[in-house]
Amino acid sequence: MSSRLRAGLIGCGFYARNHLHAWRDLSDDVELVAVCDRDEQKAGAAAEAFSVPRWYGDAARMMEAEALDFVDIVTTMPSHKSLVLLAASHKVPVIVQKPFAPTWQDCLDMVDVCRNAGVPLMVHENFRFQSPLLEVRRVLEAGTIGDVTWGRINWRTGYDIYAGQPYLATEERFILLDIGVHVLDLARVLLGEVERVFCETQSVKPSIAGEDMATIMLKHHNGAVSVVDCSYATKRDPDPFPEVLLEIEGRRGSLLLSPGLELRVTSEGATTVRSLRTPLLPWTSEPWHVSQESVLNTQRHWVECLKAAREPETSGRDNLKTYALVEAAYESATSHQAARPNS
Image (cartoon, rainbow, N blue to C red; front, side):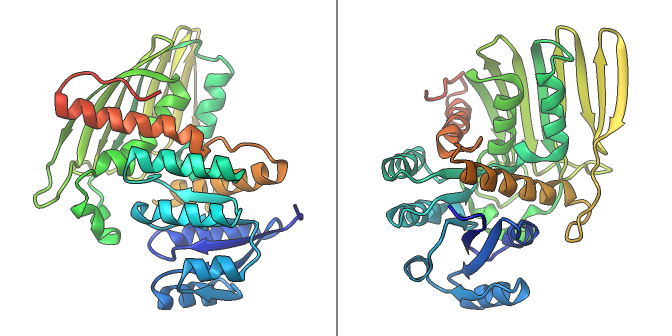
């Protein structure tokens, strides 16, 4: 594989601008040669704004015309399966936005097709790659607070998510797939794989099709217990959007990531406090910076893995474990009983 990878991007909508900025920042390793969107005006505008040589209104035409080392799919989830299978048919590695797909079977199909085709597949699970959460992982992996016993991962906001993504109001499976998939993934990473799930959901905002609050309790295989809660209908001042807040307890101490991204770590009776805020990039701004920067971190990880022929941390195969937690949460919310994730 050449030192500079030729990439194509499909989907030039709401969040794609962050991907485009990040690929430009990675230009020493990646050449973005084409963009595509069903809305040709969006594709043309993105190509012009980011000096991309070619743009297309049809993904199949782009895949046939371009010699690509990978494709970045930044569309909504109903289109993911067809686009991933299209890339696999051309033997083109693919990174695809979350949520992976609308159904469990779609996720399995994409993983199976890419595996059989020998095509690397990564899900753009960017919460794992937020700088503050990478540091939390380093603290845990160093054993600073000992073996984990309990945790809470918290995403609660009243931010008007519908302004930029109005289709979310029509999703019958809403917050668990939109944000729950992120925080459940973090629960796996920070506290370990999950044995069983208990979940209750609520629909608070009038005139939405799905749930906008979810509270989930997880029993982990290592004995730890965690609570994951997420909300788009919380009235807080100040609103912590878009920060993930968390607290984790271990046998030697605890850590707390509080609003403003302050990390407080207590170990063997001694406490340290430090800020995990990182400097703004030329294209990021508050309050979005923590999310925007994570896109760059995620895409850098994909490029490093692709060049090293190494499976990405958030491969399609790995993301099945996270998606299984979402499915178990929905099952539990319906039955009002604990559910076990698919293995």
